[in-house]
Amino acid sequence: MLKIGDNIRERGKMQELFYYQDVMMKEFNASVQTQKEDEEGRKYIVLDNTAFYPTGGGQPYDTGMLNAVEVIDVEKIDSEIRHYVTKFLPDNTTEVHGVLDWQRRFDHMQQHAGQHILTAAFVELFNYPTVSFHLGTETVTIDIDHAKISDEELAAVEKRANDIILENRPIVTKWVTEEEMLNYNLRKAVSVTGEIRLVIIPDYDYNGCGGTHPTSTGQVQAIKILATEKQKKKTRVHFVCGGRVLHELHWRKKELSEAARLSNVPEEKTAQAVTKLLQTQKELEKALADANNQLLTFEAKELLQESDANLICKTFTSRSVQELQQLARAIIATDEASTALFVSKQADKLQFVAAKGEAAHIGSMKEIANTVLPVINGKGGGNDTFVQGGGEVTISAEQLLEKMTKVLV
Image 1 (tube, rainbow, N blue to C red):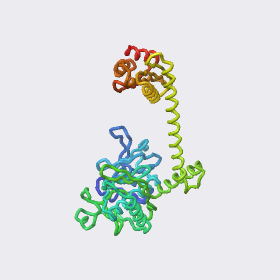
Image 2: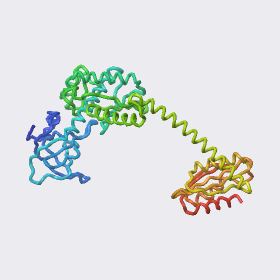
Image 3: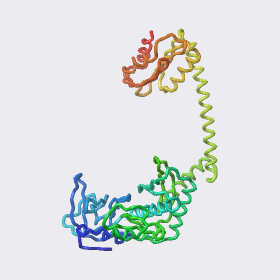
Image 4: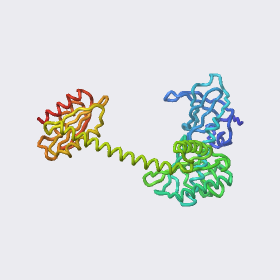
């Protein structure tokens, strides 16, 4: 553990912060500088030094404890590092013992170092630069400045990245001036001035970075690319490193095993079994749709036979507007001189369909929609021969059908 009494903010030397002096530090002692509330009423504590990393450079903040007080967020505001806490320390507290949530910190270090390694592999192999980086709670993403990356390229990059990990190369940091920085072949330009922190994997990657990383590539353990997605003219690569690889493997293995059990096949034949099931499902859906169409055609003929005129009007309960549309189309296809007016009540809404055949000498269906939609505070649309809509249950289904019918008589 380290303890210094000088105020780091006053000295203005970033490299003397504990999280830069010893990235593997899990606990530390420090002096309390102040305890305040910010403009939003959030409580925070400022120390003379800290091992808690504040949000920055794509890496999330650390959490942990200051004595018995929980640290829930850490931010660098101007020149001070604020430890946001659930409550203040006792008023007479001058010294604190800080303990990091090491599992969270080390995970962040693995992901951040893995990002450096993977990004460098894209540049080394294909000259595809990374333009942004996000460390999420489950996966990490980098946006690559290239519109399309092939599976073969992804495989090559992943292999190169894991080779660098297996070589267990050191990850070293170095503070340099702007002039000294010119001696290094940096992967990308550095925007900061003054004291510049380089993160270096010798003979592989040189990059300006203020984040925390393990001391060797071997501590990253492994990198696995999970997926890619198109982002305008760029490609977003989703990946995980270290402990997250094991987590991904665990839940994917669990899901695969369950899918294999349900399919009653060995795990290696799960994809084949799922493909067969999907084909069977499509066949069943088509057969069901054909049977439903036959039933609707039969129902349409029955309604036409029951009607004394060419105007078929009927109310339904819990029938979808899609079914009403199909039934109406079946009627006017069977008898082009007919007109169908249907209303269905479903829970807290009314839906209607109005359709007329090509030979029907009757008014426009749009007149029906224009008349009844305001009554039910509804929305709908269509044309002169076919309209549909729905709205609130302001009146009964029978009353709505009566209003629709009156438009035509």
